[in-house]
Length: 103
Image (cartoon, rainbow, N blue to C red; front, side, top):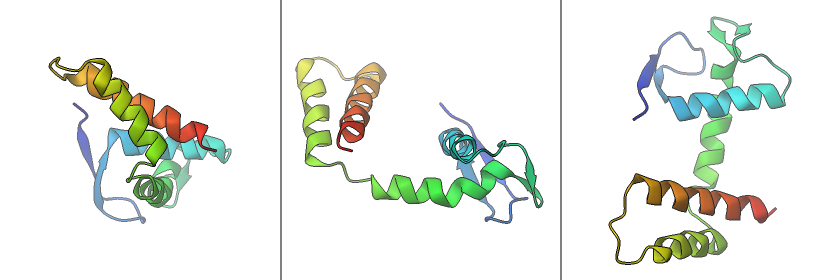
């Protein structure tokens, strides 16, 4: 389980950030040619990308039909079996793959 960390030194906002959000924000830094730990004001650069990460996650919160079908397919492959973390991870990856293929 990912640990949460309290962000209080960021000019972006004082809020809790999960490790996944941090990873996404750091990835955006690299896309923009910025080192994630480079200071930007009182906080590392990655913290300034959190609003963009949140906007993207909110934009893809509701899966497309293609994503839903891909997830449903993965769940039906194991129909009747107990769904565990691996099943959920496989389903999520299938949905993300479907989203990426919609470009």
